[in-house]
Length: 89
Image (cartoon, rainbow, N blue to C red; front, side, top):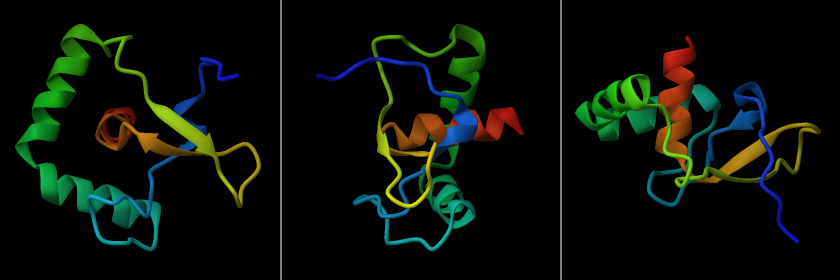
């Protein structure tokens, strides 16, 4: 049975094998690939998140990271997670 639980952003990794982008070799490269592809869309998403917060009905879906205990990989919501990581920094 699936559960909805809050997970700290620091425990969530972008999907380095996202089907929308070529394979990337690191979190930094995955983030840069999303930035390069989305450009202004990510800026608009960031402004929307700052102004209205995340829509609670648009959940990010994650799975347990196979290699790192206590980490998760994004299955759905890479753009949102990338935006949140940028905003956090």
